[in-house]
Amino acid sequence: MAAVAGGEKKIMNKRPFSLTADLDFLYLSEGHMRVFGEILSAIGRRDGLICVTGDPGAGKTIICRRLLEELGDEYNVVLVTTPPKTPQAMTETLDDAFGEMEGDSRIPVAVFDEAQHLDFRCLDHIKFLTNLEKAGEKLVQIVLVGQPELAEKIGHKRFTQLEQRIGAKLKLGTLKKKEVLAYLNHRLTVAGLSEEARFTRNSARFLYRETGGVPRLINRIANIAVEQAQQEHKGKIGAGDVKRAASKVGASLGDWKESASPRRFSPRLAFLTILLVLSAGWYFYSNPEWLIFPYDRQIAEIQVNPSRPEYALKLGAFLTREQAEELRERLAREDFTATIAAKDFGDGWTLYQVRLPGPYSEDEATNVMDRLGKIGIQSIEKIPLVRQQGELKK
Image 1 (tube, rainbow, N blue to C red):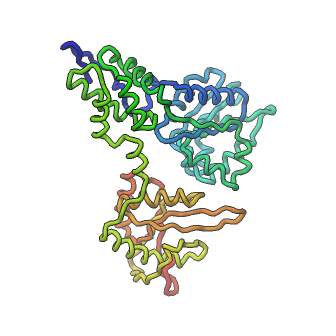
Image 2: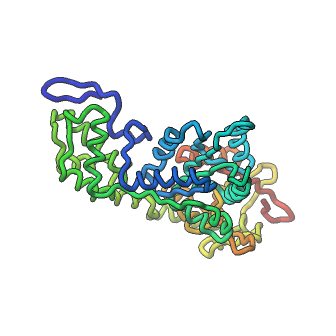
Image 3: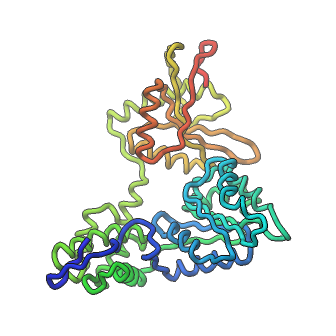
């Protein structure tokens, strides 16, 4: 990527507003510095468990990576970027990282990024890990970093004991209005473009209004604005330039929030929805321990060919109905019609499960799973459906 000024081209080593978590571009705002300092203090106190939450794009991942650099030889740090799906997988991850530490005086620290994806079994396992002590101090320091759903999960009454073990609860906010221009200039300087391009105060104000100070959203617009400036040989990037850039990418705060809203059904999709909901009835009717919400109660007969196996697909289980509804709405935007079932496990908590009821043949189930994988849904369980005594059973 080249920057143009006075007819000369300067080759950039890196794009100034890349969406990747690059430590070279780390800008510690007032809020980021406060949270980062409190994480270090909590680890130094050997608090055992630290929870950091923040909205998507606020800079959580890059803070995790900075933590790896900041903690010196006194610590043995592992960053887990893909949350384990089972307690066994979590144990294996920690064993791989810390299994050879016998006689090692370093303090083990496990940082789990995207921790909102940890299910209730893994969170229960973390409660167990926080009980492990050596010489009166926590054996391992655990830092959970995730979106606000993480706080909602831990706040559930099931995890009262886990929540009580948290030594520091921290929330990472967005950039303040006065920090946006400094953030833009910082990234341009790191990329070697500070002399060739600069944002005006008005453009920074517009970016703040448009993005709410979310760094990732700022980057998406600023990236286009810089490219435009280079193509037009402009050194100053004004409010009009960033408005034009914003029109080319869905990076405003309004666009970002709107993407999570339910999609209006077309008449054709509504008809298919009715058919699938009716089909779902038989499948859930065969599982009386699951309580289907009223809008999923319709029941219809499904003709099953015993010689041809058919399946339903289980896509996830959640501790709150809101989380299940969020996945259901996301699937609706991709033309999948899912159902939600609830199961009461006692002790005051309920599990909400999201399913595609099918029924699907083997090939259909494989194709649907492939489509789901392409939109980022990986945790899929294929459930065989068979006929027993004239009824459809799981």
